[in-house]
Image (tube, rainbow, N blue to C red; front, side):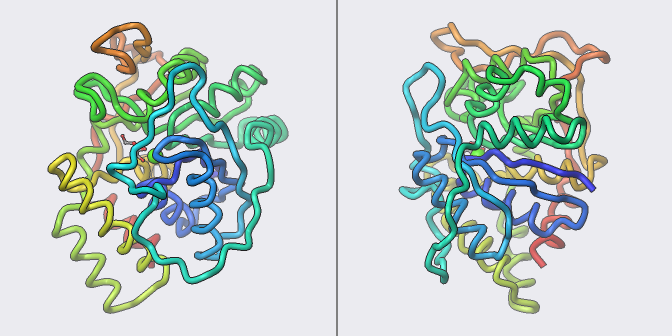
Length: 305
Ligand code: BDR
Ligand code: CA
C-alpha cells in the first residue's frame, strides 16, 4: 500500500488524478491540499471540496498557499475555465469544509510517519517549498516526492518553461535542490499520454455499458478540457497530473533518466526552465522519459469503474 498526500491546483487533469487515486486499490490518500495555480486558491480549494464530496471520497481537504513565493501570480483560465474545473455538473450541494492549514498538515503527517508518505504535487511547488523551509527534516522523512512539472525539452507556457514550474520557479528551485528523492513527470513523458478521440471514445463506450458517477464526471470534465486544449494549443489534452498517480499504482509503466535538475530563475527567455544537469546514476532526481500509454489508459479505465 502506498500512502500519499496530494497537493494540487484542481484543474481538469488534477481532478483526473484525484479520480484515479480514489479508484486505486493500492493507494491510500491521507489528505488533499489545494494550492493556487490553474485558478485562484479560492477556486482550487472549492474544486477539491466539491469533487471529493461528490464522489464520496472521505479524505480531509486543506488549504495551501494563495500566491507564489516571489513572482506575480499567473493562472490558466484559458485551459481550465473560469472556475479552474469547468465542465462537470455537481449534483450535491457542497457541505464539506476545509480542515485548515495544509502546510502544517503536510509537515505533521510526514514527521509522524517517517519513510511512509509520498508527497504528490501536481500544481506549482509553492506549498512544497514552504514545507521544506518550515521543516527541513521532512526531506529525510518523506518517502519520495512525485511531481508533475518541467520538461527537458520544450515548455508549454513559454518555449522554455512548463506551466507549474513557470508559475513559481523560485519554489521549484528550492524543491529540486532539497536533496529529496524526486520523481519528475514533465512534459517529456506526459505528452506521450494524450486523450485523443480513440481513447476518449473508449471511456464513452464503457460508460454506456457500465455507468458510474465517477466516469461520468471524468467524461464531463474531459469534454471541456478537450475543447479548450484543441482551441488554445491545437492538441488533444495530455494526462499530465494523472501520471504521478499512475506511477504510484504501477511504477513499471515508466522509464526514467536519473539526473539532477535545476531551475532557471534569472533568464529573460528561459525563466522557469527545468535544466537537466549531466545524467548521473547516483542522482536522487528521476526524470520520466517514457511511458506505456496503452497500459496507462487501461489502469485509468479500471480506476474509473
Ligand atoms: C500542468 O499545468 C496545469 O495546467 C495542469 O494541471 C498540469 O499540472 C501541465 O503543464
Ligand atoms: Ca495541475
